[in-house]
Length: 209
Image 1 (cartoon, rainbow, N blue to C red):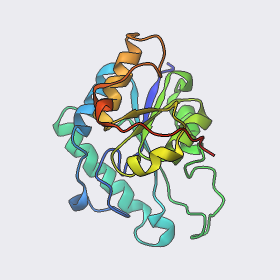
Image 2: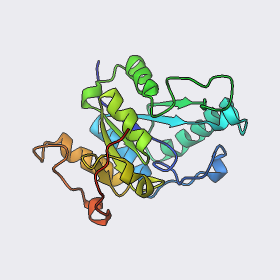
Image 3: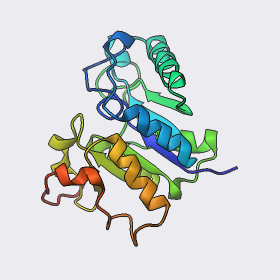
């Protein structure tokens, strides 16, 4: 069965940004993130994490560390009655490691296409939530609707993202916005202002390159 998904960046979107995080002891949820994942589950979207993890290529940690971190995150979510359906990560970097020209590292959309193949995702009805211009670019390239959050690098990156892309204060606000889109409470995806947007500055339009 084909289903829509909400693709989620990890660091700066789900958890507080900490450079090259791989230990569960360093994990801190963005406020409202667990509730956001529960809402994704309730709405019937697949919750799919797509995350660049260049710390592997740089030698800071290995892929098993990523897998173990995600297992621990799953345990925390299960205790709250929530779940992530799948995790995709890119361990590559353009200047480090044995693979420097991959198609999975955002802003490339390889992870989203892999998820479509594996999970039978309807990309046209899907969303991408992230805090960077590369998240938006990956979503656009895959044909999903992007939402930029103002956590993590969101405020600093907002000027790099086209003004037509919806902004939300944080992931829970973004998911509440998507819920209203899903329920058809507005005419178009870009016309609705979610509750979190009242705290978001207005930005000059610039197109993502």
